[in-house]
Image (tube, rainbow, N blue to C red; front, side, top):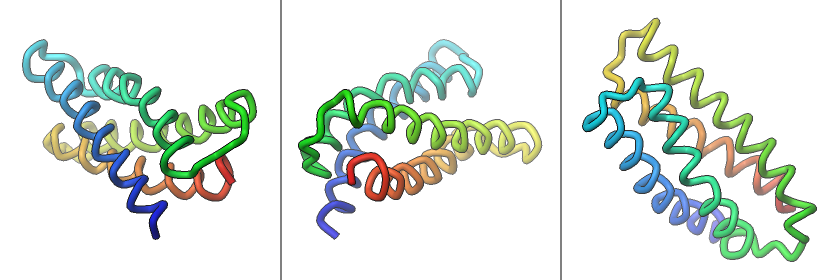
Amino acid sequence: MLQALRFGAVGLVNTLIGLSCIYGLMFFFHADAGVANAAGYGLGFGVSFVLNRVWTFGSTRSVRQVLPRFLLAAGGCYLLNFCLVMAGTGLGHFNPYLAQLIGVGAYTASLFLLSRWWVFR
């Protein structure tokens, strides 16, 4: 339970950073939803890795051991997120801001499970 709460706190920090970037790019620079999404997740990746490795999961394994797994897990979760955002804005005609929130939820839940059971175990 404590891990989930810590992961949630790290996620809130990343969400604030990522969504600020995403929405800022879309609102101020009229960036495409996909481009904005990629930039926001790219920005939060480093912060997420460090905070989750050290604080959330307390991993003592070397960065060399866990970083490749985290890259694969985060990449897979991001792909899920990206597909949901693109499907929501393209096929579903969702508001792009709502589609981004749906993508964030799917990314967060799947990355927690993969991090707990595979990346930092």
